[in-house]
Length: 86
Image (cartoon, rainbow, N blue to C red; front, side, top):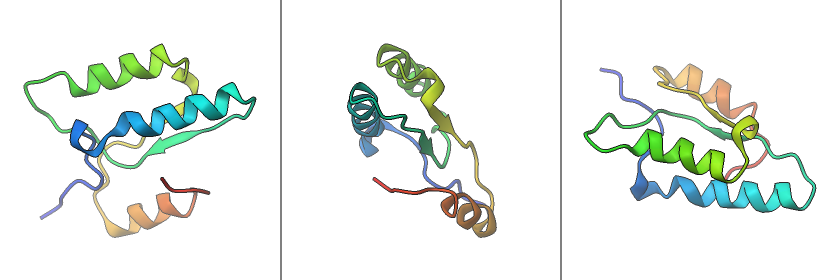
């Protein structure tokens, strides 16, 4: 049975990382924010609200959401490309 890695939902406070990215960008840095995982499919608008916040913070070109990660091999491959974790 495959379980999604790193499901994105409000309880994990995904917007906190966006806030950090916006601060870094305001300081003249070029952050690339990568969320490894996917959004929980629910009746609320978690994904739409997340991307609205991305747009509001002017991070549209600075955020990547990997989507569903099916295997340990994929998870570790993605982790190997990340420089800092938050």
